[in-house]
Length: 162
Image (cartoon, rainbow, N blue to C red; front, side, top):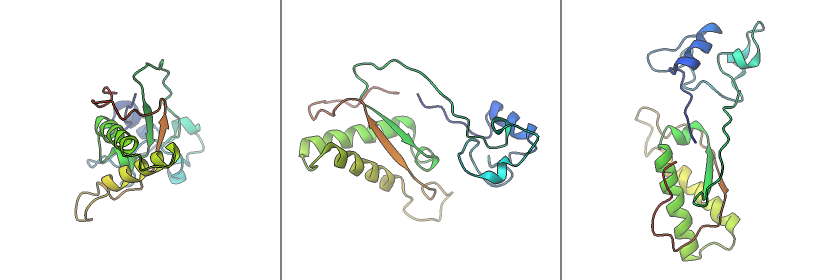
C-alpha cells in the first residue's frame, strides 16, 4: 500500500515549482527538505496565494482504500527516517519476524508491550552506526504498528509482500 512521495516525482515536482520552489540534484526542496509532504515545516507553506494543498510542501494525505484479506497481519505507519533506511518489504519482513519471535518466546506480558518493543527494535535497527555517511539512519524516526490479527508463533513464513 505504500507509495513514496519524493520531491523529484513529477506530480510533486510540478507542485513545488508552481509554488515557487525548486528541487536540487540532491532531491531537496530549496536545499532543505528531502520530502514533499509533511505536517509541519511551515516555512515551505507561506505562499498566501495558494491553498494548503498547493504549497511547496503539503500535508495532503494520499488516501487508499483496500479490502482486508485473511493473511493481512499488520500495517506499519512510519516517518521518512524509517522509509529512507529500509524498503517497504524490509520493514514487513522485520516486523513480521519480530512479532513471531516475541510470541514464541513469550517474553512479553502483553500484546501492547510486544508492539512497543518491536517499534523500538525497528527504530534501533534503522539507526546509523555512525554519522559519517550520507545521512541515512540519522533522521527522526517514528513508527506505529497497527495489528490486524494476533501474531501466530507457528507461522513458518514471512507475511506476503505488500
